[in-house]
Length: 252
Image 1 (cartoon, rainbow, N blue to C red):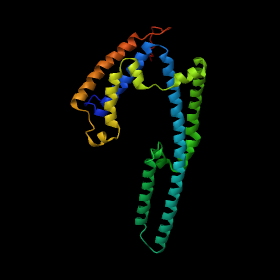
Image 2: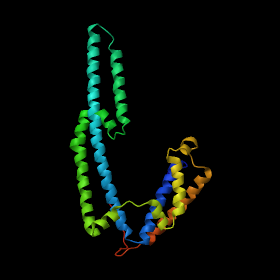
Image 3: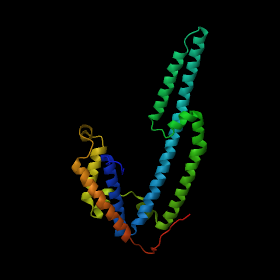
Image 4: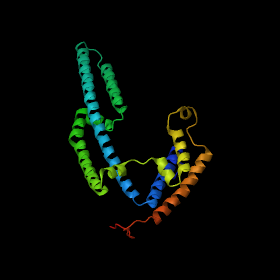
């Protein structure tokens, strides 16, 4: 949270919700240390899903840039033709160039509206070279990382003992059920109601004030203060078979 000002409603609810979910995990660990396997299994599954989604996104960006390159070439060829014709009759070329600069800018904005990760880079590098970088540099780098995660999942599957146990350990938790299992169901309901009101574009969100009330802000600030202490207490007393009481410090 910012030190120089009070946090915004979104910052405050985000911090409180993240802290709450960390406490749920810590309580689950305290309840049964086997939850550590579930945490690791979900981590590997989500990391692999993110990588797969990113690879799909890069392929869609390549297709986007390929079309943008075609459109850009069409704009360039049309501009050259009009400028050439204007010069032949001593016409004004400045207006023509300005018109096509606007078309190029509109094309760039169209690319940016597609949530393009490399829109700014493509404007600097050019669409063709950006496609080359994605195909020859970025995608191979991400595929190597995907191979590493898949290798870790293979080891984890063996450790799990069976495919059904592996699937169970890799399955996403349902936050409300997890919160209920550690006695935090009412806190979950309150926090998620507030965050839903702020973020989801329903009639309530569109018509009413998007900020928390002063009372709600105070409630969340008080929760953050208390929950931070709870988190430290949970970390301090967390134990598991084979745990070593030691610290690792790096020095120059």
